[in-house]
Image 1 (cartoon, rainbow over the protein chains, first blue to last red):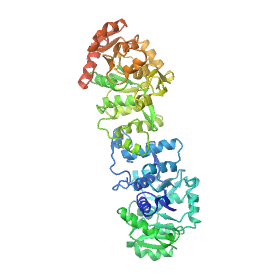
Image 2 (cartoon, rainbow over the protein chains, first blue to last red):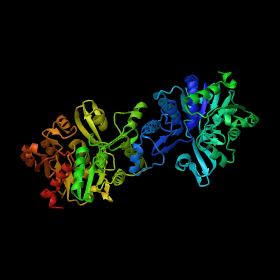
Image 3 (cartoon, helix red, strand yellow):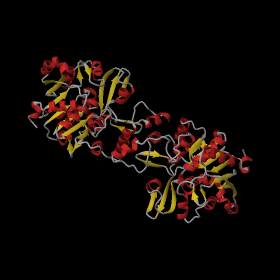
Image 4 (cartoon, rainbow over the protein chains, first blue to last red):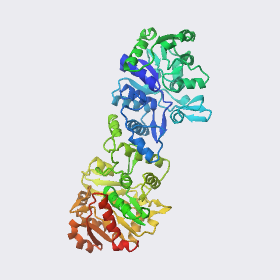
Length: 314
Length: 314
């Protein structure tokens, strides 16, 4: 089994590539829940949905979130009633939130709900939340502490980020996978998808049992940079790294992962960083990391799986 | 002030007519909540919504419920996820249920929510639930007792109805209207709209303070038959009356209202029933009661408001 840790769009793309490049049954995609929140009384899990929709071939290719061909009658009607419209929920997407909220209220764990939804949508790989226990990212800004979505969507990451907190992570346990914590399975390796290290990967690593799983690992870990040429492929990673005093580059991300990662995949345009990455104790892997289409995703996934440190164990 | 008691489609049509035939500010439309239920974790109030949508000019003219020009992405996506699809909720309509559910969870009374929604949609007349306390219609059938919507929508009223119960009605209080129970306002008269007497009007009358308000009234009450020529204008009224051993006719409805109503409006096609209705102690009023368009609704409303027993007091 390969475990892939993923956040939203970039993570979902590589996760989809992996699900095509290997036996989907041997792939477990562990997804960030730090972005999850309650909105309009509904339990919204943006990263899980992005991964599920992407692997189901239903994702909106333009927005990167939500469903392709989505309609917006709900939002229009909600606005007419004076409801909150800052966080946009499409009509079809809403079914996911309504069904999830209902199942959660009935006591069904998020991992089981995610499993059912993936199965219903024909996804072969296992997708699971990092934890069934709530982990919630909060952003300390110069305007005070903001919950993640009001910061990310409501304010478009505009307030300067001073720090991040992953609330409740200390008490969270890894979600179950076939009867035991996902961190308890023997695996051939782990892949950190090209997701925002602070917003997508760190909330997963903030779970003590996950951190221990990484630190005491006997399996190889490969990470893919979400940043190339000093800019995030998508999203605010570079801006946040700059505000946190980190170098907003693939090297900055590599420093963040130092000690946890054995090989670090960077873009050809960043080839000059290879030596600095090697100096951090990671094997630099230089290739094309921008995934424009499914062929790109699958090609990058195959290259990762073919890395000697992973291939030797599969 | 005129108080109109209404259920779903037929009631909403006459309520709209009344709102055009008189000063909307002097009209209070009290709506059945016996059909309300929790579905998919959402609080659904079908009759309130039908009345609000109809008066806002947003009602679906074909189905009689829901919004005109509705889209159905939510139901399609919910079905894809394996969710319950027997009760159809349109994408735009869903905003009403999500917003209502959230406000109820925050402690906002249904009457205040309904007032806000009416205002947001530009409805001039006051629309309010009969009670902010839950009243729930249950149907005793030969297959056992069914909650209203599983009977009405789920089973399309197919199981033979043996009796009706309006649960919690005994403990329900009339909803507030401008600071006091709607039954405490001095009024010029009341109109029982052409709604199903058992399913729409009886749940309102089952509230003890409403029953007392009717029995001790000093104002005139006019009822409009929802049945003509032995068939319901819409819905299962005739079938249910037959199953309950009542005559499925305007006369049967008049008998149901005997003692509570001063004038009873029937269709020209039922003119032969006038004497029997008079014998029940009600003034028969014979006119065209089928409301095909807004002109019909307004004309019927004007005829009702012009009845001497009402006109004399306004």
